[in-house]
Length: 286
Picture (cartoon, rainbow, N blue to C red):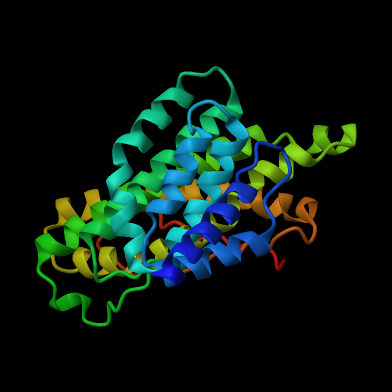
């Protein structure tokens, strides 16, 4: 019990240091310690309660830093983080609506990030066979019923659309060249902290979406297959454009953080669908 109280105090201390209301990005050492403590505690309530007290509706810097932190903890922490975070759906929704009403690109970024986090928590609560970093054994995907595969594909594509919304608005807010010319890159690096986790999620989801579409299009009627493939294609065409833009910007981030590479091009090989197949994005080496 004594150790538990100690871990809670340490977690609170590190969270406060991460979400301090300044433009400076959080130190990775504090983030790493928060993730490690989440395994000690098997509880995310102290993380959320500390952030609540700091106010997730008033200070943009604090809220953005918490979103970035939470995404990392959701990806790398224990399963209990997902379960506990679902208790805060109403807070996520209210904060998202609060920031969406502001006429400011940075505030729109925050609203979009809340939608991503809500979608991620919801997805993992409903698909417990997926790990926190979205890994899943799909080696027997053809054994799943058609309705199950269609539902899973739709939910993956829904989450990818949330990711696309976040990536698009973040890139819109990053007027990199003007910031560099003005000699102040802090806002660029601050907002770009969302990119690595969002890119990693997109990379993993693309692989599953590809396998599901390929499996379903070979078994379903042509009109249904066409609808599924069109949605898959339209979403990942947008992803292609987003990742092309990120690729051209990578050099401006220097060594502050690494953005993962996206999956190599995959061919669906569905001759009966006379549709243009999307080309998976690829990023330059970091």
